[in-house]
Image 1 (cartoon, rainbow, N blue to C red):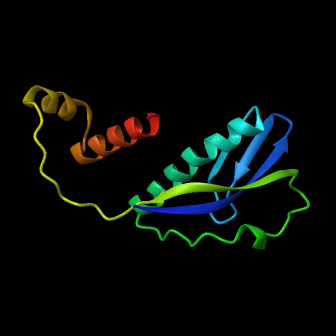
Image 2: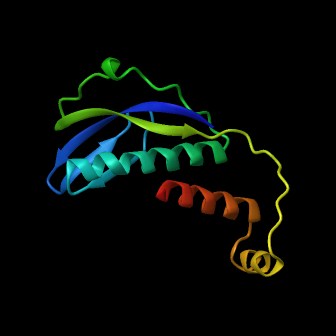
Length: 127
């Protein structure tokens, strides 16, 4: 994975704050406070990049934050750079796992690799 930084715009709306990414239509985050919205933007960005990669769609090159034109219809309160991880290609690895645990995984997950990758990402994000 390669780290990339996408520009995001934080806007105020009647319900709180929203974040959108001009380079990534549909990638948004929202919260009650500006700080919560900014913190949620990284999760939204990484989820969006993962979906693009999973669907075989190209991940655009991030724009320069200063090159983004202001939209008069947006109540913009800040611009931030949000760190994301550009998904890399899948690599086959061999792991050992206790057979009972593997059986439990197989009962709940249609794809072992995705399950283990998602679990690893969640644990790493929490640390």
